[in-house]
Length: 422
Image (cartoon, helix red, strand yellow):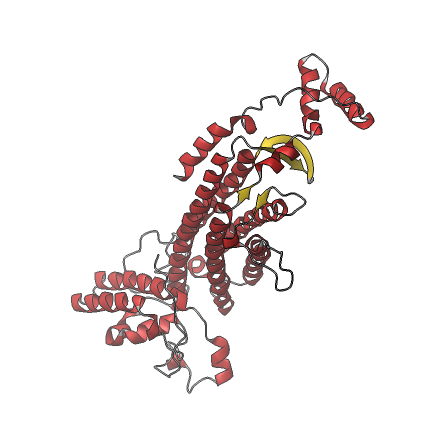
């Protein structure tokens, strides 16, 4: 991954804005502070996009061999040293051009900050999608290992939070894995959307300079600088992932209660109470639930930002990066914490077996047994329901097999799921 911890910007003045030749005199401090953007996380990605642009300038004869070599060398250094991004730099683009020195005065030919930031942001989202997929895989593998150990552990399956039919804990955990697998595909789709290049679009109408087209160049220059669908796709994938993690967290919270007692929390992933000495709290699972709402809010916020923007670029789009930056950080943190929590859960198989021994869990089996004997299902349903109501229900002697996609095929389902994640 290209991202690195970033220090606070140094508080010293340097250089001028890239547009300063149009405005006579400095901006008022309040205006400067309002317009300045905290985009330091884009630094390595902007350097990468600037290298590509420099190579295009060189191919067009607008940079010499020496100038290209100097630009590539300095950009590699700048990407690794965020301390060069000063408090007085309006944005990451200004910081990079300033640090490039004389060659920096040539590097912006045929380019606007509009296509520059779009290119850097797309690279950032590509990297964030790859990181998300890796972290999802890590959690899925932990869940698969957990499910394998509990493949035959009977438990009640629930609908409406009421006991419904018998399943196994392994089968239930595989439902978590299926959610994560869909999340992986959503991030892959977001990465595909981000993989196009806006370079060459300039401010909105391209450039008169005869620069070679970048790989994957977008077809329309106006769309290239105004599009943020790729960021929305990333935030959508993250919001759905957090929704899934929230559902998992909710079940862990329930299972860890004294009322359920299905699992015990690991002390490495739980906290206590400042007042009640007996407490062990499922804070990781609870906070994942809370952060799901935040992730949904960030997606909604960016949707609201872009919904009314006229083409091509508007300064409103400065607000596109903060929700993506924050979501990436919280997504990574949540998945890593859940790996610790899930891998440390201690299953109370005796409590699960006791819950799974509820005879009413076999009411559907009893109705289907009557169907196999020739009775219409509605008649069988009514007969069993009547027996449940009057207390005369006599469950079948054993749990009938339930083939895939039911819990009867859990071992085969485990092997198939492993093949997708390993």
